[in-house]
Image (cartoon, rainbow, N blue to C red):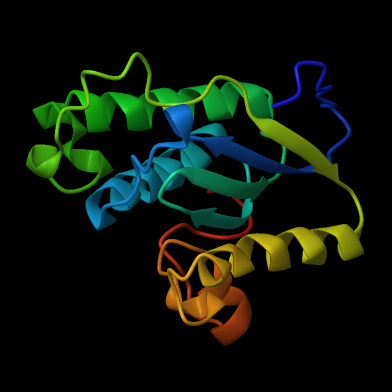
Length: 176
C-alpha cells in the first residue's frame, strides 16, 4: 500500500477498500475462515451502522464497498473487523461462537507476527458509474483467479444479490 495514501472521510462517499492477509498468505483459504470473516462483517455492520454495498472474500485478501459509519470512520470499522477476525482465527475462544462455527479446525497460526497486513487501500466512490465499476471488479475477482465459474458462484461475495436477486451472507444496503 502506498505510504502517502490519503483518506477522505466526512463526505458521505462510499469507500472501496482492499486489505490483505499478512504477506499475502492464504489465511482465508478455508470455507470456515471465510465464514468467520463474513459473520464478523455482518455483526460489525449492524453494530456500527454502516451499509455494505458489496464484498468479496478471497483466500488472501478482501474487497469491500461500504458507506461511512455514522459514529466513526471507515478506518475504525476496518480496524475492529480485522482485529475480531484475527482474534477468532488465531486464538479461538468459546465466546467467539457467535462469529461462526467452532474454529477447532484452525491451525493456530501463532507463528505469524500478525494476521493482516497493516493499513488498507481506500478509494472514495461518489458516482454511480464508479460504484458499478468497483462492484464489477470485485465480483469478477474469484472468476479471474479460477475460484468460481461465474461471479455468483462465489458464496463469499455479494454478486448473487446483484446477478440473481439472492441475498448473500452479509446484508446489503441499509444497516439495522
